[in-house]
Length: 169
Image 1 (cartoon, helix red, strand yellow):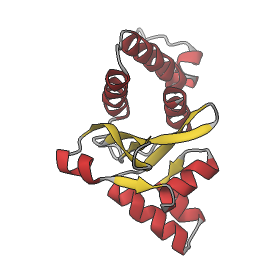
Image 2 (cartoon, rainbow, N blue to C red):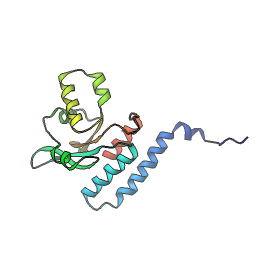
Image 3 (cartoon, rainbow, N blue to C red):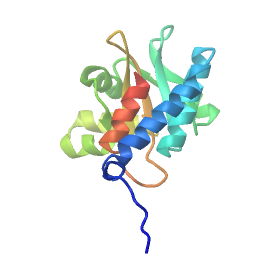
Image 4 (cartoon, rainbow, N blue to C red):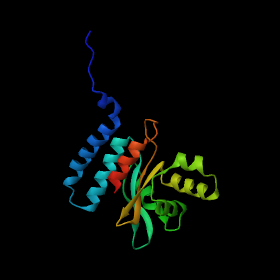
């Protein structure tokens, strides 16, 4: 009998190797982007595909109205895109700008049971979001990358979150 031989590093670092391959693919994908809009569109398309998340959005601050609005998305209707906005003082934006880390709905609900948590959860529902990754420019909060639950029903691993934080910033 002949058994396929695999290096132990392939088994131990499978997720990391896949993340490295995905980052290389993402880098190739965005290298030829000609505008911010194209870069954002390619990012949400790529993240949706790789993370198997049917709803992905990038919400950035609209300087005119001072609200956070969708600048690129996958899965959302035109109506949802037009109507989804968060003010500076919304529970979700307050949490994201202060905590500077990934917000995972499941962990938030497990750890905190408060009125603020309910408000954040309501905001996450509006955004169809299960996971949010803060976006920063020169250490200033400018928005967030939002993903729905995976279509495969798997949760997001720490490696997934690290991968998304690299893409986001």
